[in-house]
Image (cartoon, rainbow, N blue to C red; front, top):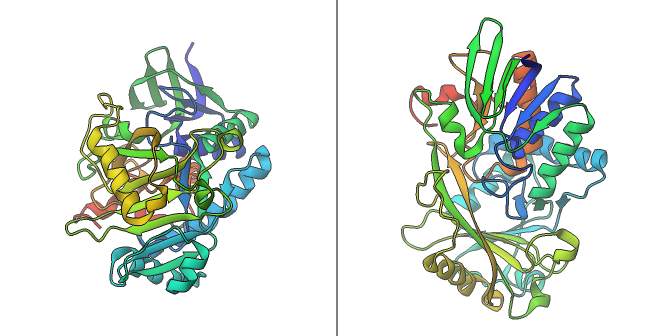
Length: 389
């Protein structure tokens, strides 16, 4: 007999787990299907930490969603009694006319956010280890910080289960069909039916959403953890998170990182984590080489040498993950254009994790109500009808 649910969620990473939680809280009978473990390191939700910030340089329209996301993260912490969000402060630096600085100031002005400009002496007093080029502006966002990503996915999953959801891990979806009696999902183990389907498949989304007008590029991304030469300067409690515009000619990304987190408290690798935020080489998600290459390790040390020379110590750990990039670098959250019972969220382009609880709520709204009062219109698929946004 085919098991029947109100909603099936395809993919239980950050967005899928959040959707399962939101749907189950609203009383829906939910099945979440994940091809790996919950959580797992093979998509875009691994690597111990993710930045969270409000003065969103990518576009001011994200700020109202972030306001709700902050509140929802705290609500999840309270429900699950799990610490997830740590507001260490965030130091950002870049050319005064660069994308990072101008975008942050625009978002802060549009939404009346607190955003401080630090003079050189203030930066030295606050973060003595950070070396910023003389022509850069330095901004400080007190509400910025980090999320524990694997712990967060586990918390969403636990919350979903506590509210009656069913989760099935290590089960791969082969195909889905929409018929007169609902959506049928076929896996390598079973067959399920539901009134609605939510697709949150991360790097594998393109295979489920092969629609004209939506292109997704999956790219290889690397992060590393190092043992600083002077560990005390970079320890949690003494060092903030950071985001630094890369002014190298031809570059189009940002260096980012986190304080050193003691593994006994936070789980995961010890040391200072650093990465480069920009799409890497295009890859097949099923054929990703997860070994760090010599050139990738050299790039990590290059960023540290330029901006945090006293942090440039031995590599302790590294991880290769993936971004799923939309054409314009913005998320895609919408109803399937050909199949109304199907909704989806994808194309998070390396900056989506912090939005997980509010995206989960939006997907629950779309699946159960057909629309959402959350301000997600600018993320719809329709913007690609006349080219990228």
